[in-house]
Length: 89
Image (cartoon, helix red, strand yellow):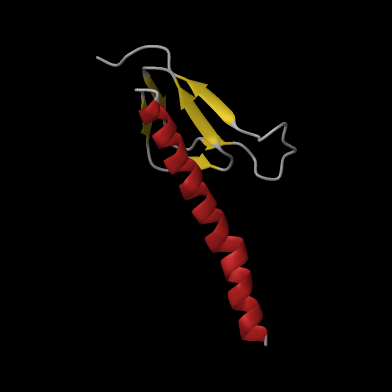
């Protein structure tokens, strides 16, 4: 019973949050592609909430950036909107 509880705890507290961050990242990349933009992300970026990229340009996120806090209160859907302003040459 104790082993089952540890496995369940591992799945709920480690695997599910990593999968959510992965889905938020892929969703942001897709939204930037739909808007004919580009999302440039370096290693170590934390997508803790849904992120949307709008605009025909590029958005660059450098390392050690965390977007959102999962436990914070949300307005509406809690999505962060990043808008690209200029096209990359």
